Image 1 (cartoon, rainbow, N blue to C red):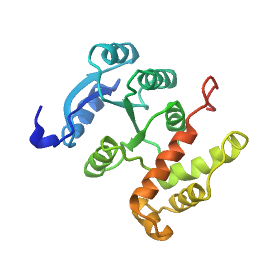
Image 2: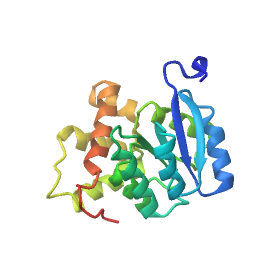
Image 3: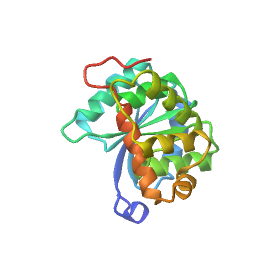
Image 4: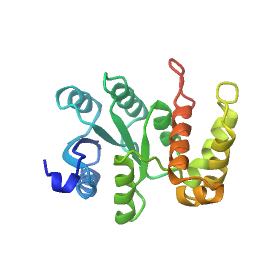
Length: 209
C-alpha cells in the first residue's frame, strides 16, 4: 500500500457498478482520492456479496442508478450487519430521488452526485471517504417532507437538527450553516450524521418508497 498517498488511511474500496463505462470512470475518480489503497469492482449483488466475505472491503461505493432498489438495500443491509459494519457510499444523479432516500433508510453513510464536474465529484468522494456526509438543498427539502409525513410518530427532531435542515434547504453548506448558527463546523457535520441515522428505517419495518 502506498502510505505516501494515503497517510494513515489505507482503505480497501469495492465499487458496485453495473455499467462498464461508468465503472471505469468511478475507478479513475476514486484513484484520485487520498485514503484509497486498493480498488475492486463488481457488477451486481451476487459478486458484491462474495467480495464482502472473501475480500472484506472497508468501504462500498454503490451506483444506485444502475442497480435495482432491492439489490441496493440488500448489499447495504449485509454490509451493516457484519460484525464490523462496513461504510457505504452511494452514487446518484438526483439528490432528491426515491432511490437515494431508500439507500439512506437502508443505512448508507454518505452520497455523492455523479452529475457534478469531475473535480467537485472527487472532492465529494474525498469527504465521504473521510466520514463526512453531504446535505444538499434538494435533499434537505426532501428530508423535511419525509420527517414530517412518514416519521412524525416515530422520530422527533431536536431544535438544532431542524435549524440545520432549514438552512440546508435554503442552500447553505456546512460552513455557512455553522457561521449562521455561530457553532463550529464539526457541530453541523455531526448533526447531519445524526439526521442520516434518524432516517434509517426501524428494524423490521418496510421502508417508505
